[in-house]
Length: 487
Image 1 (cartoon, rainbow, N blue to C red):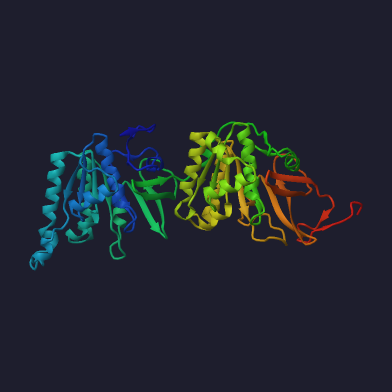
Image 2: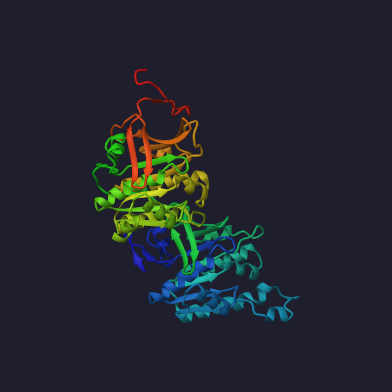
């Protein structure tokens, strides 16, 4: 158990990230409802709760009303939970209910079975005096009471009985259209709601009496070691002081185009069609950061780590040695199975624990197309992540691919240009039957920049940037042509 500034005694849930959402954990001696559709992780959350208590030397009681104890223990073991220190009260129906005649032609099930179950629970609680109680699922009591009024009355009595024994209670519900759990939501001190839709898991806390809690939804995953919760990122809660000094690329002509470089603590979008050199351009800034002894991290959402490393080495960028020296980290991200909150936590870990000063996300389009979530939500999440990184003085490079190879100009294709302090664009030109590339700066919030375009090439020795193409016209219209300098 822990306590926080509001003097309430807190009880850890045992779930990674959930105590942060709850501003320190559950409040001791209160009852909480865990709800969600089948497969959303309700029982797994309860296993975290009771085993965390046992590990802390507390008395934990698991009241099981559905699966038999052998199955509960087997399932717990498969997820790495040790129930040896947890008292399990198995009240699940046995096979006798099928084999014997249980029709109760004279008495209803509530008159025959209800008293027996409540007596067994009361005896176990009185005998063990538990600090934590997990009931799975409490809605089974609904079938042992005469009507909804009696069910509500019994649940109120049951939770008060446990709270009088100073127990913190977690109970799950099984809700259906015919039997919703609205009554349980009113009766509980808090609600933990789990959702599992389209292979996406999330957690929200719509109710939490007596304490603040982090607004959601929050990312969630169930892995081999149980549940992980990834709290919603709040940029305003983070920040450090830093100097907005220019960060050069290390290529003099490119830095002239950028008015000296990109400033620390800003977001730069590097956009352009496929194969034009966007990732290589971003990597050039990471190489220069390594020369200064600063650590950078690349998050790859659209290609593998091996491909990135091989491609960079082929143009003279020593990313392998940079990784070995610890000035560069390269992380592959599987966006289809990753929530934006989980991704934000990975970024935070690099910044706060490993002192990363430059972050490159490759690419922004893959983030929107593949990352779990609705399109509008993802833009908001990316905006929050960008604000957090800026507050922390981290220089951000977002790689964004556009659809057009040549023709009508597009700044970005993902609707993220408003996030950027700087927009660097790379483009193909078809001139005299030859495919050429140019680089330009469309936007720079801090400081001045060069308005001309420069020819851009990627060679075996890295990036080469030419002189300003002052005699080139019509690039943004998609109709490039060279004119006499005097025109």
